[in-house]
Length: 317
Ligand code: GLN
Image: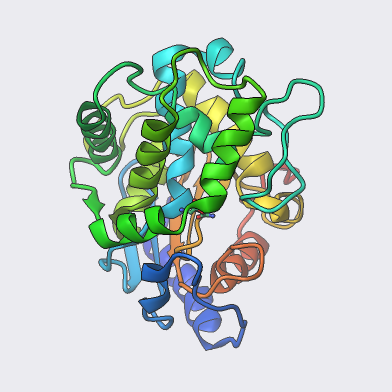
């Protein structure tokens, strides 16, 4: 078993969860997408799933939330499976940007978006999925894969978040045009469809319960521990969690890697999902985020988790 004494582990994590719940950590619910502003800031949940399918849930673990940027690694993984790493990385880099998630900048030498974990890079990877297919097929394909990552559970879609996202997307349009001007997109890319598709992926919804199963699928080399379905190749998982480790927490990625030392991805909805390779996956949800866009309770939870358990990737064994 990945976690020999599961009850004891659950108890230990619950203690951390309860301590973090009591802390005043500041942050506020993201407001730049109007529909996100109406979320209850007191929601708080943590879920865990091991690579052998042992699970527990704490707090509001069945509440669906807006996945937002937590979708970026999945979009990147699907692009890798369809196009291969060489092609994908002829359009997007592997470097942390050292800037906020929607900053207008490209790699200095190659004029490509820095990495697939920030907006520009995710708009790019969105243009590399089901190329040439109508949007309904592209979206259908993606939701099918999400469902496999959730062990057969369905992924939700929030239409008013999507409309709200689309209404306030000047920056994302600007990012797309900046990349178009630099000649970064594959030939024949339909810019508007790539953006539409990106907005749709940001507007997916799920609970921490489901997201922990997804994280555990990555921890398990791409095989869902609940259903044994092969979702992604091991090389896709390795590439994806490498970039999550270096770029998954926006401009906090270096600090996160130092303190927590695990591949992770956050979203402005307030979720963070974390892969403990060969052990399992976590998801924490608490809507107030800091100025970088990371959930304040989420950061604290995972810092305390890494202090208590020897999960840090660089931990001497
Ligand atoms: N939908 C958001 C945007 O495109 C996603 C950003 C995020 O979660 N950091 O701006």
